[in-house]
Image (cartoon, rainbow, N blue to C red; front, side, top):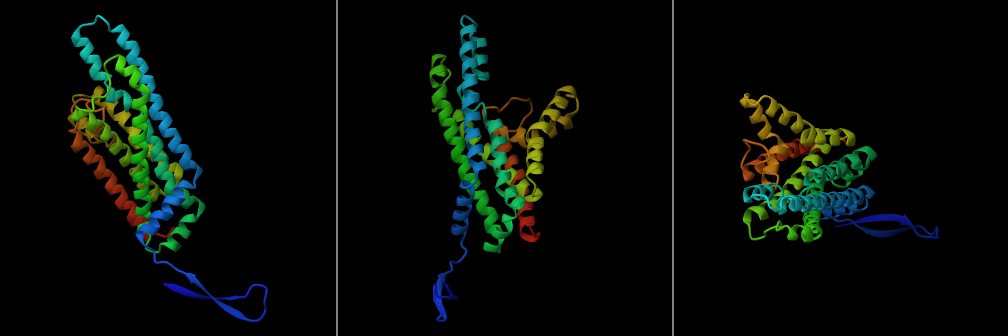
Length: 295
């Protein structure tokens, strides 16, 4: 496809000349490429990605040092006590120790990907280039999924590398032949990616950076803490326990090394499906608002 543009010749007043400016169709691949470029030109992207790696590796190293100290103290303890310690501070728990904090950092990136454009007015340029709007929104979502999945995978690998000398000395390294441990590490990547998508959807719904970030922190950190306190304080009330296990963070983390931290929780794949359902609902609502309400 091409368009004919009439423009004056440079340095000449002899009359108009004709130039051909190529105009390309708007395809999802081109939208995806533009969203990829926009993401990496933002300084906040580099800060949030760097912070995620630091949080993941830092927490893992700190917990590995605790394992080293506790291991020294447990010498001579009964096999039952040593087995209990191994369950609490296993290799996957150590390597993925910082994933919940990392999820909040990545959520900030997810929210900023779209609220930043609303705050600067760039979203109007985006929708002018992509009039159907939804390809731009889902392009952002796909870029976020790719970046988050790779980021968390690399962070887990680095955490394993830096903690291996300490964990190996205490016979607490990750057993890659154990399907449950491999599932827990893969589930960590899946959980953090879903949280990032959840934040992107909230950002599109609220169109306000502070509001979106506050809501994510409330849903994934503040409300679960309050409900879990209520669960212990009012254990006789069955509905409190039901609410607790259906919270996005409690349900989603059942596929991670933190599974079983609380009684009466969902199975791992059921739990992550619940979180995926919440995320799909938020993304659907966000897509409706993006499509039908002016920026």
